Image (cartoon, rainbow, N blue to C red):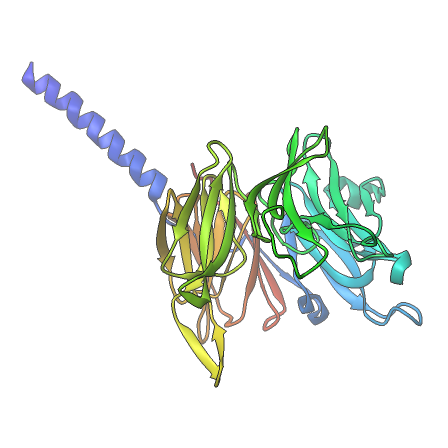
Length: 393
C-alpha cells in the first residue's frame, strides 16, 4: 500500500516539476524572417501587428511638404512588395497600440488652425482593399482616449485653440493621450465615468482643492476630485498611478497608486525616482528609474533611467539594471540591452519573469511587440528581424 502511494506521489511530483519547468523555461529565439528596408525607413519608428510590418519614409510633396511621411505596410511572411497606405502631413506621426487592442497611426492633417489630428486604424483588409473607412478625423487639437464600449475616440479640445479659454476657469485633458503615448494599456474612458486631469486656466491658483485628477460622470457631466493638486496620471486596471515631488528631495519624484475600488492611496515607490512613462500591466506597474544623478554642469543634473522596476501592493522590485528601454503590448514586455557589438532583448511576462531572449549583431537597435509578433530593427544593417513570441500563461 505504501509503495503504491509512494509511486503515485512521485508521479504527481514529477508532473508538477515538468509543468513548472514548462512555464518558466526560457526560450532562445531565432528570427523567422529578415527584411531589408531603405535607410530612410529607419529615421522613424516601425511597428508590427498581426503579421504585418508598418513603416514610414519622409518625402517631399509639393512646396509646403518638404518632410511629409508616407506610410507603408508589408505582409512579413510574403514575398510581395510593401504597399503605400497613407500620405500625411508631418506632425509627430507615430504608431500606437491602444487599449482596444488595435494598432493606429496618429498624425496631423491640414495646416495651421484649419488642421486637426488623424487616427488611422490599421489592419490587413485595409492594405488589400485600400479602404478609408477606418480613418478617424479628430477635429482640431486636443487630447483623446479610446471609448472601447462605443468603439470610438473620446476627446477634450485644446483649451488654447481658437480662443477656447476665454471666460472659462478650467479645462480637462488626458495625461496619457493617444496622440503622444506609444502604448495606452487601459482606457480612462469607462461606461459611466471618465478619468482625467482638471486644470485651471490661471497659473496663480491659491486653492487647488478643486483641481487635479477627477472623475467625470458621463450622464450629468459633473466632476468629482479624486486627487487634488496632481496633474499627471496613468490609468491602470483598477487603479490610477501618479507621481509627485518628494518633499524631502526636490530633485526626485515618488510613485503612488489610487485604488478605484476602495479610494485608498498607496505609496508604491519611495526609494527611486521613476520616469514619467508608467506602464500598467494587470495589477502591476512597470517603469524605469534610477537612484543616481549624474552632474551635467554646476547647478544642473541629468537623470539617466537605466533600471526596470515592478511595483505591486506597495512594494517596488528592481528587475534589470543597465538597460536601454522597454516596450509592451499590454501583456508581455521586451527589455532592450545595448552592448558594444550586440544588443540583447529579454521577454518577460506580467509577473516580471523572463520566458525568452534573443541577441542581434548590432549595437543600436529598437523594437516593437504586439501579441505573437516581435520586430527588432537597426539602421546599422538596414534590417528588420521578425520573431514569433512564445505563448506564456
